Length: 206
Image (cartoon, rainbow, N blue to C red; front, side, top):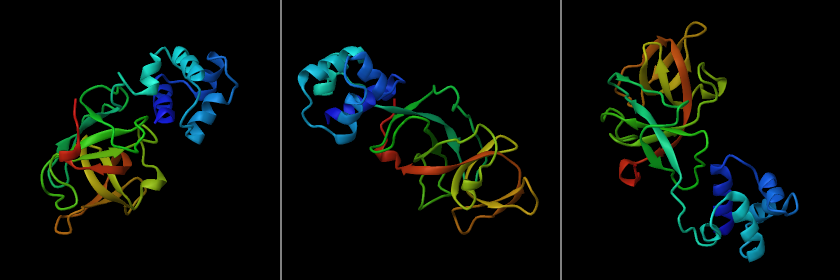
């Protein structure tokens, strides 16, 4: 849809609808209205102005021709029963990429790859988990009780349900496999809720 392509181009350029509208000589809300109302047939004259403001050929907006897929960085690998050193590429945003799953905005989102089969049948080897970090370090209150991607004090990456520990700053890490051992009173560097689980066979990597 034209409105979705305009929104994607704006996001990739790190700008906003108002700035694009003003650069295109439109009313301040002109581009926002196209996006919000999902206007199917905005005038070609306006599309041409918007494409010039964004520095793209108008056909990229009209038909999507030449638009690269939106991608998300794969930050590293995590395990459940086995220790896996986590490589956190969150700040750099480089490294392997995966095409963003439908409906998941790529901005501020990172993926990690599951290692091993200890999380079967919930997660399988090679599956991807997508998450967003609210802070570079620390454990936000809203992750408690949820399935999380996390890094412990030793630099190991895990996928666990996070529960409060017996003392402040410590956490119990509950395995997704009922037969696995709980990790008691662990210090964590960070934890982030899993936003989306994407099976390996559906992922398109670059």
